Image 1 (cartoon, rainbow, N blue to C red):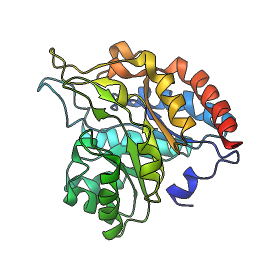
Image 2: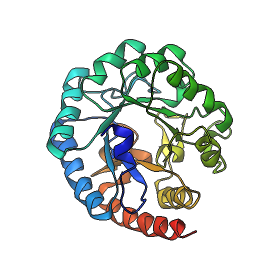
Image 3: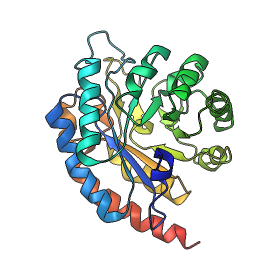
Image 4: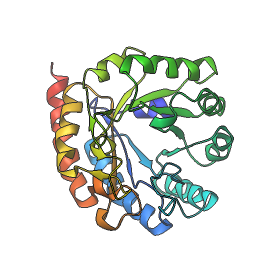
Length: 271
């Protein structure tokens, strides 16, 4: 079974989940998060993909934490995949990173700011891995069909697109839920990145802010309009997370959220 087939295996036609820390901070932390989420997803019939960036390349300040080392972090992702028998996803930033990361993960994610980079999309497609393309904050949903076509034209057969909000002024994002069905018309799964859509970028301190109290609101709306998947960054203690803690969901709040979203999806499926 390939990754895309796995994401579509829910017996109750539930959404799938991509969730984990913003960046891999260490092995114990990554395994702990996966151990908390995986059994909840099994109980609710949610196909689960562990998310973790092996390196953060897009930081506002040069002194921001970027990672523990590429290969060390990728090996931790591979260990999560092996121990929990679940797929894993990570970001890549340059074409030459695609083949390296593909040795350790199941899904290669294209960051929103890089979604138009043809060489990066082609390199990801040529690995044979599933490619998840985040919609640029500066692009319309209609424009994402060209990114999907680049992956397909390069031989990629497994593609997904992720909505993560659109730039609204200088320091905020807004989600246009019309974009979910619009991007689904390309024939690929569409994922709602709940936590990144609540970022408040470009703050005066150089550290991105966020609105985590709105996480359930954004997620519920995405399920109501038919999103195929939900993307959430989570941490046991977001206040001490080394990246994007301001818009993360506390790990102990995730099970209840997933239960609410599953109940909502079952209602939506009736119509």
